[in-house]
Image (cartoon, rainbow, N blue to C red; front, side):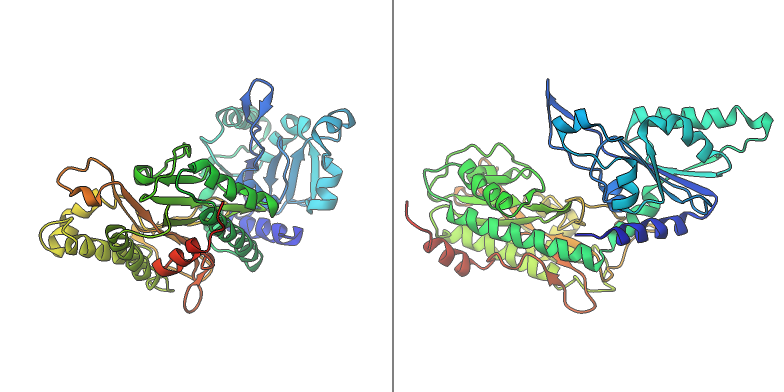
Length: 439
């Protein structure tokens, strides 16, 4: 787990970046109604969690650099024995200071009274405008209350800046404690993928495979980082397929894109395997192209390499492979220049990962793709998708969707593959499937 001292260090670092004439304001995630009297499971806002580790709703974090009576403030719910009997214990303002390391804490009901005074004298406000319209209006109201006192000497803020511009650059680089959690998340997700392979049977259903994933997550006190994608046959060609209710047929491939979340930190793994345990000639040929593309992208995961270099390497391998198999026509140069490969490979080769599955952080700096640096973590996930009914494509290739995805940490040397425990090679996957217990 992340210790309170690390959360405090993050807050101090962010305040140093903002400078002493600023104020930084961040509300917690709201509770969301699922239907009538039921709610979705509560998940804290990732930015709020990164700076506080505070798990409750109805909170507002306020950072006031250089404030004499405490820079790091939390507004939160008070203790309420009646409500706690229904919903569980609350930290309350006292617990926020004692257990979470804030300089001071106040009841959330006092926010309207106290925050205008904190805004007064600050020239810049860092905040996520546009995320929460209701809170946007409240903040504008508090600023206007300060403005109304200008004739009495009040000094309202005059500049509003996007909080993510500073905060998301911090989140891009993972600390040792974060990497430890991400290794744990990846290990659980890897175990779940293997369980999903073992649960695959011709005549079964996609949701039975999903159940093996979910069981493994919960058995290790983790949750799914996102809705698992468990798509067999033509469903594997739908990039964000989520129905997970089709029957599994012998001869089809099953694409499983799923990840665990541990203490807020996500993993993200995709493997594609044959329902009946053996890849057909065509499936194997396409799979080997995707695997080679991933290896080419992995070789680019080095400090000093451009972020886009991995994608470009994967695209070249995929285009070359599709040309060799007759699925594209012309030369490699033409395929790359025209983007004809995008018919079968239409997405980028990866994304940042951390507290969010598609984590924050700029991919470009000053208009150029940024260079990779140690501590960055991202996915590498090339794929090929040939839906049934693709015009001009021989029937033997149709209905094949393949993606191979792993989570990678940039180090000073070779990348650390967090999800390497799940087999990738054709022979290793076929051997694992051959060892499945019979039902």
